[in-house]
Image 1 (cartoon, rainbow, N blue to C red):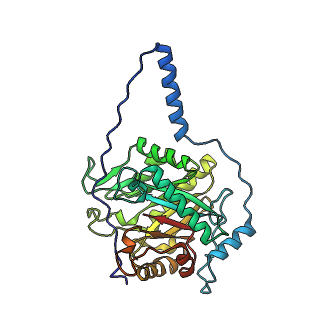
Image 2 (cartoon, rainbow, N blue to C red):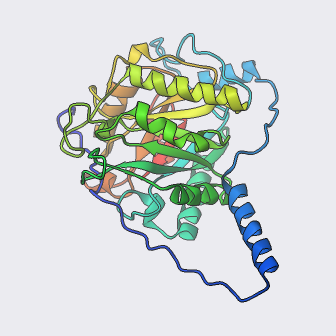
Image 3 (tube, helix red, strand yellow):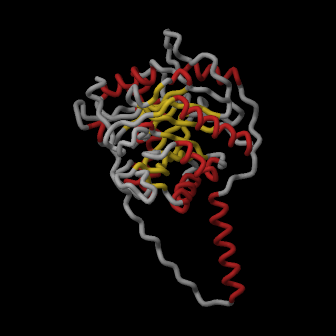
Length: 351
């Protein structure tokens, strides 16, 4: 199984987007200035943090019961995870299951998020949310957009890091779309030949937003200088702990609810020393089973790299196209996932 697991390689470049032109309607200078101020204010309102919100105290009894329910009767002692800290008030997990669409709004080949026009994409996301609510009526569903904001590229770039950082105006578009859909937003980072210490702080203006969460992809962390896409990259627990610690500080500084932190994984070496990962009340950690293939391959991957290496919560990735290449030629349904996998994944990602 480990030798046969199918891997995902992202395209070497993003589709270029041409900025639209604008024209000014002749008018008095004052009216023009007032209009400019209103437009600027509207843009600012879309992308700035909301005032601090006071959340009700955590219901620890309910939290414990839901975590136990996610364990789905596991008797090995691995699940629920022992000695995990209770989250700060306002936590999403395990009170809701997150269902996310993954990709980049400027690239049709990187995932469902950019493959369809926004209205059609959001309608499809709404359909998946309804399906999960039907499959597990006891768990409300939180829709999400999982946007690749830092993309491993097939070209060196100006800094020779083989990385394509999305400009703020494009990330802002994802922010506005998430707000419109009443969704939370994940910003995903693929560091390529750079490193997470350099890339994470560049997005702090977004980490300050209470509905923006984080994902990192070891597949494209090329610590040995290999170009991304040539081999599978790696992170160590020390890298994960840096991200958790950084985000925990942001949560405390800006009085935010806990951040969900996603780490993708589908091989052993993608994440080394998992047992050294530190948990925080400010962070809800999810190990997301990545990789595509038929159900038996996905089952083996989930068992070997998620179930056997417990950290806190688990996620499961589904591919609309690639999961159907081999027999039985169908993507797993919510009902099948809930029946087949323990612990139940609380984060579901569609690509």
